[in-house]
Image 1 (cartoon, rainbow, N blue to C red):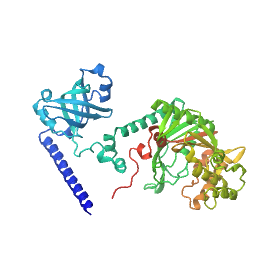
Image 2 (cartoon, rainbow, N blue to C red):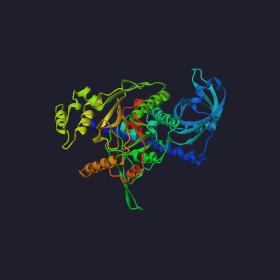
Image 3 (cartoon, one colour):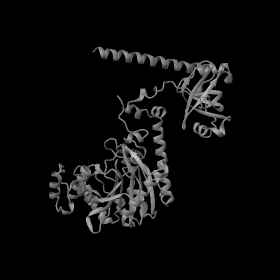
Image 4 (spheres, one colour):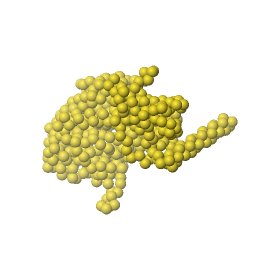
Length: 501
């Protein structure tokens, strides 16, 4: 009880201190406005250099006159001279503000600046006696007033939840976070260059779908008032991109947002980024080669290496990667050989023998996939292609000619889990119709993730689609891997969060 009272008192004092700081800062703004120096009236400031340019090229720039802008991050000394740190998008640089250089009036104004304020600085590049590259200030102006104090050296923003909610503060006080998102941008740029250089055409397809297709997932539903119809946020662009293959575009890709009304975890966010690639006259084996070449090339370009560390695991992205059929992988890690299992009931008993209870009505192929997910996937640390998936879990994939109960499909697994999914695309309209009808039965039985029947897509297939390889890569998970990020929220600027009460 006594401890609770102490904590309440401490919180009360802290809140009073904060309220006083807020009052003081607002008063400083009022004073500036009344003196005709409203920082919010400034509309432009000419910047000649960023901090990194100055620091990296000091030998050439020493003695040069520069103009920089950024956020004031520290102030030291308040006599007739002060040292401060200014932060811009590239990093920090020290500035030296001296009363003799900027004049009495300007220096008195400067003394009232707060940490967090945006400033414009003009001055001379030099190096201090201690050897720190700095700018000797000739003029300084406030460009925007910070009315709230920044967290004190991160101590006030340890809460992970708060970091995600207030990403702007996270970016200000944690340089590693900013680096992660800069790296993310570089990864996406490298992916686009890789595909563009190989003749792929980037396209845009609708986010609002009349029929959500291309994946097994629960969609978000909205309503268009003018048309008076329900629409779905896309779960995948697959069926639209295949229509483009029918139309003769041959090599296309799309990189953008997908939406799935599903759970949230360290690997899942309802809104995420995915890339899908389709190439006519190729198959799933060609997509394997494209996948390992793309990811290894991007890693080399962005990170300078194909050997990385992820959460303590050394991962080698150098091609070629391991390849196993799903049956081979299940046999390797569980001892169960599905080549010797002939019926759904045998498969069910085999699963029960290793502690897995399949749902009623599950078929042999679905049980094989379940065993893989439960017992095998966690063992795949190095990049590994698992291929030849059961037809029951692959409604958009070509069957294997010599083994029609399986399909020409692979998924890529790493220490993060599933990262890519690829097919030899099903182009037989009759077979596709039957697969859709099987999905409709599942949907009618209560599976709200099962595919709907898409008649227009079937019509497109009836005009003829050439043999085609298709590939989907989860961009967020790839960024997680290449930035050593433990959670998908660490690579999303604004992850989906439940509002606070």
